[in-house]
Length: 313
Image (cartoon, rainbow, N blue to C red; front, side, top):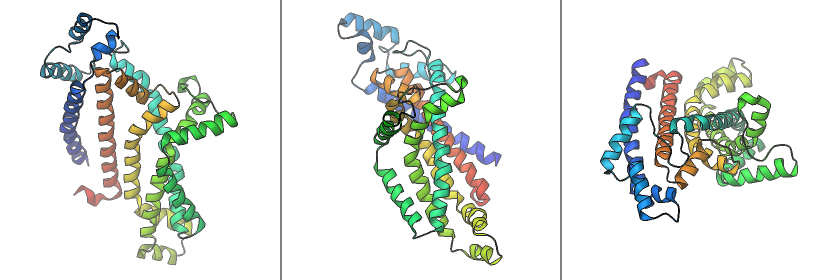
């Protein structure tokens, strides 16, 4: 197991290198100039040139990449052009809201979707099965921001149960933290509940007619025991796959959700940095998201080997 994990970790090095090169080149090859944005509309050519020199943007691209890569390997992501703050500190300050939203979303999705999918497979062809399949189609069809605005209208404006926007750090109280996050997490979890429930239903349905299921029933096991200990356990690999995929897709989902609910997380930071052409911040955030994506896929692969040891060989 250790050798397998080490091989996968080594394989992530070229992936991260390719991501770093692509992100760096794409930003530099875009037509807009961050120096001109910083200088403002009324700035002279000399003022813009001075800012470019101060930021190091007048140097050859290869030189800029070498300087940036060398500093990044040391954990120094530089200073933000737009926020005038160390990028590492900026990311750490925005990390808690994004991690809180992502974790609460995936917990909600898993707790709701797996029982729904399993029950839908058990009652295949019944009203519950039809309800779950209908919700799956609806969850994939409605954009995240539409769900967000709908939930805001119902629970924040009409019923006045929950706050509309903002974020409260968990250190100030779990109640306020949860109150601020429940609507964004529900908004973001809709598509993942639909995805995971659909795959769970299909996977459990495939194993329900296997011989070991009939044997378990013949031994007198309860239907709940058959579903959990045999059907769900043997259908776990594809379910874990889609959960891992859902966690990775959260990287894109938090950008929209944080914008809708004005949550000061990494998604909101990415949007602001892109609009300001803040190269150091964009590069650092995308690298962080890419590393998270790679590590999530590694965790899913390790989970495969635990659920099915044959995958290791």
